[in-house]
Image 1 (tube, rainbow, N blue to C red):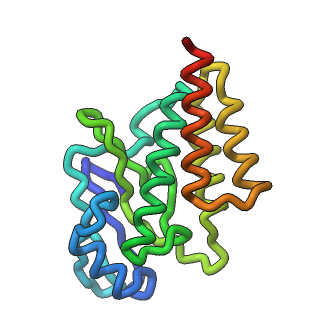
Image 2: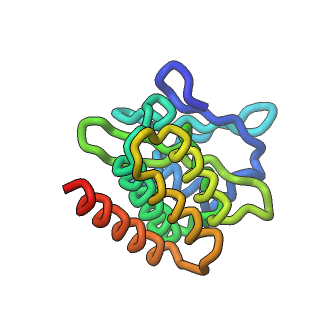
Length: 177
């Protein structure tokens, strides 16, 4: 994974589908890092071009507003990767696979496949929200808890969740003013 300012993944050849390799190698999906695949004796190694980005795990996300921004951008990326034939439930979301660029505020994801056949977008996003929530120090963490509740108990599509997170950001901004 992330080590010495580079992101490298060793995996079995069957973990990443052939059409995923084509998309990921081409760099056509600008919200996922381009990957270079090299075969080895045990499977394959993927090298990611993460230039200018660092994983969220290198930061302390202490403000709810920052966490909502990251969550909204991450959900947007999941909606966009569908257009590139990448299944959102196969995209691992962790503080180590979601990256941030300090200069321009962009978010990108290092595609690491979730190989569990029972994986779901709902579980991935919930886990990511709990990781974001763990470092919040302000009094507005209820917005993240409400987002988790919506994901757990409602049947929202990604676009609907993105809109709800946007509403939370507006409410938080209004409450802070």
